[in-house]
Length: 352
Image (cartoon, rainbow, N blue to C red; front, side):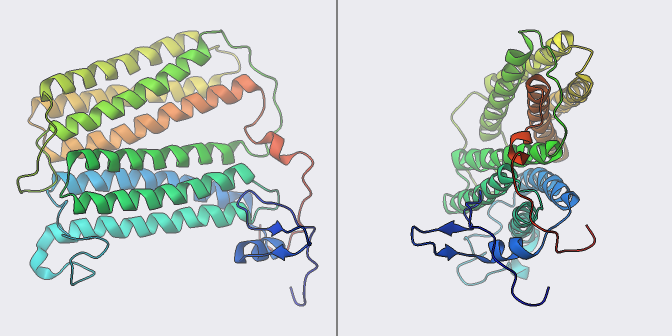
């Protein structure tokens, strides 16, 4: 690796790291410099994207812990904890530590998403769609951090809290889609599986029903007792019983769609899609049980956190079912087109 390596012909990568003007001047960045000299094993990007899914679910759960422990205003300012200190003081107690710990997890999430971008950029075979997914996650993390700051400034307005949760689920969406693309990358083209006409609409309805379920769930949270702080935080002016009943009916609709999808999915050629549908069905049943238990027992904190964890699993599972059925129906991996007619960079990093 000594000496100066010859520069490859300039080309436009998905992340825009290399560009060329009409005068032939190449603008290079640290990522493009590294990409010309080093490559990473495909497993590096697989692990990175899986870790981003786990971290995205983790940020949903820790946000729930902040809310049910009444630590939402444990830090009274943002981005610093107070107007005079970056971190919480001993006088702020447990609430300050919990809220600040949740903020520190955002830094961990940034590191994970950064690793997704670097690992995708340093692949021998380019992964532009995965790279775009990594950058999408990065900007969603930035958006979520800003909404989190607005949540503190607005003293836990239930509408901003709902937007904060939806931004976290948007991040989970980008992470799951990116992970799916990596897992399908480089696979051989397979013949399309003949699908009954009802299969694809059923998967679309499944995702749409889950999106509505999440949205109505934020309304139930906004009207419920866990406001995120022990002070007098205003709640949404909605009927809590009506909203929770609607939330339960949407959960039943999701369950019905899953049963219907299992009945119309072909048994030949769709083993993976059927397996994921069954796993999602089990998760939805468990999630419904937790939701019913927390409603009947006065919304205990542990049950609320478990329900949030379940909501993230259900949403990730619904996306997986949708993407897996779409891949089987198309008859080719999601990124197969990206690997066609692509020149491979020489390998310069051993141990792949």
